[in-house]
Amino acid sequence: MNSPFQKISDVFQPDYNVNFSIQKPDGSILLTLTDTAGVAVKRFISSSQWRDQQQLERLITSLQFSLAIERGGQTSSYRLTKHSHSAVQ
Image (cartoon, helix red, strand yellow):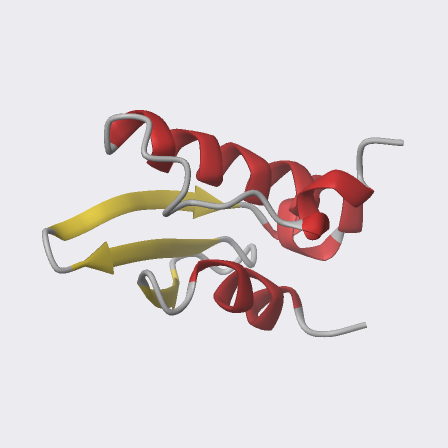
């Protein structure tokens, strides 16, 4: 399996710059997605979310929907990937 960080990066690039920063000793990180308009999303990700495949899939889907809503429903730019659909079985 790819690293969870690589998986998140692959889903959102090239539309967004993806940045991860370690926030706490418990393994939680801060994910920041930016585009030409600035910061699109900042989200804390717990270690359990990035370590568990199903939780990671849900996180990616949640981010995609949040981006679509924030950017006015332009879902063509924020395509849902097969990564998201594989968790819904």
